[in-house]
Image: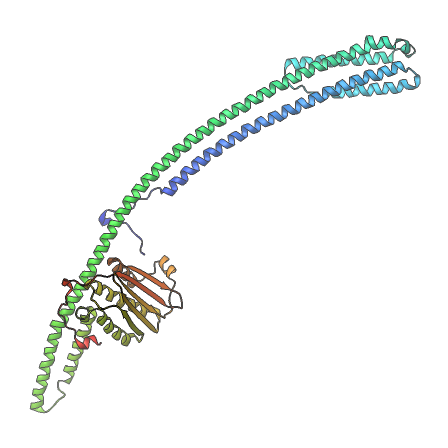
Length: 480
């Protein structure tokens, strides 16, 4: 197979451009890039919203836990002070003081770690109020604990109801207010996050819609461009087909003209030069007889006659090689038999012709093509195969002529030769002749196992215009 190249004479020049595959690939990459960008933006927004949600949940949980701890410690401090008031023995006052101070320290620690959920003026104001009330609670607890312990048992109820319990309840009330603010801030932040999610969803749908619209536009552009390229390729293919047909027709005309020229030259060599040399030979024989009668010397013209015989034989051989007369007169089988006899003598390759159902003559064009195909195939066997034997098969059916040439040579790798463009001119010529007659060519070969060439041609019977030309073969030339 030969590479199709631009034919400048017919104005067909391949213009480099973007292929359909490249156009579709670029469109796909653009669409994929848009979707990837959209996915990336959505991921960033959703990750940000999730981070804010996690932060709010953590702050709310920590704030509520801290306030619950405060309430617990405040109640625990009042319980410790109540126990001290009800049991004012000197042996236990130091322990109650230690427990109360530990409770107050825990309250201070929790209060220092408290962070309001909502960063608003109301939250900070309520936190300041809570700090003040806890400070008042501390002062009350310490003042009561520092009072005269001898009066605790009689004044316990009064101290608890007048000083300790109100101070404790105020702190608890303030913590409840702070918790309410935290819940309100948490709900507000959750609402904001929900709004953020809705906004992200809306923007995501917008981005997806935009990406989809751009993708559809790119796909349409790719389809339009691919359609335009396809139409251009189809036009180019039609031009290539026309060029191929023109080249095939030209090749067929050249083959036909070459065969006609060969036939004409062979006829001229045989009829003109051959007859002239024959006449010279006759005249030389007559002159030699005259000289023999006069002088009795028979060797005067022997060299000239020998040269004349050699020239006549060369003319006959050349005439046969150009166009075998047996092909026109007796048909394809006779011409092939004659050629195989000469081939065996010339190359020493044992060659055999086997034919079946070859009783009718084919058209002159078909017979000439088959003869040249087999001649070229046998030449390739002699030149390249290193074979010792070869068989030529011809089988004719109702509508098909099958030609097969097999040898036992060294063979070759058909696929590698085809990819490398290593087919010789002989095989190319065989393919061209076969294609001109609308036939098929199959080459089968394996390294070390020989080669098989199969040709199948439609049968074209001989017509009235294909009658024998009257060119009578020379017996000596046919047997050469």
